[in-house]
Image 1 (cartoon, rainbow, N blue to C red):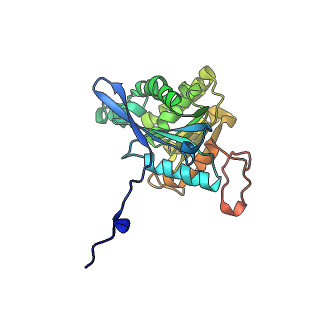
Image 2: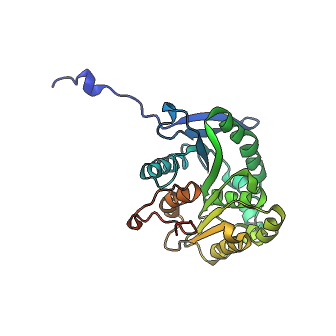
Image 3: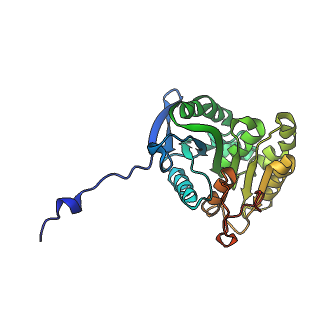
Length: 267
């Protein structure tokens, strides 16, 4: 059997992005994974930034980076720099309250989301602004507990990002305590930026909590009930729509393509 030729056996790596290790706490560094859009290295344009919660390499980074690239090819949403921030103890980092007595007993570290928010504000965002060609516009996306964190951030520190997308957010946590506080938080912090909020078939507690957030936020909240989806399927189905909401283009698409977003100017 003939040996393969040098040309047929040559290989080259596929480069998806780059990873930076950023200190979170003493002895604890986090992956900050960065995907640069097609053409970034060939010119000087500046780009918006999509911050992804649960953005480790073993988490949602590849999924969302791929979705952003495909959306940009179709002209469905703008090309963006995707910045995935790794989480580790998700219940500690993505939840703002200890939960009910039963929840706290099962997950004793829960309730430290303020520290993760500080990490984003004080370390991750300055790092990105200093090292990449950003244009001053950004958004944030995440699912499940990350969606809860994003909803909480929109309520407590709305100026941290320009637009928010919380897919299948776990707003049922702590008997919906965050949603019950939403009206007061909106009154105190006066968010002026939009939130895309979805829920799937997780039952009335989740649906009611999401509706309370939407009622508190009024026209700023795009509530997307998708009870035809499950917690396992919602993110992959809705992430293209979420990116279109966060970073819309001026393109006119044939309605048959289905590139319509509830609450968008086109819908």
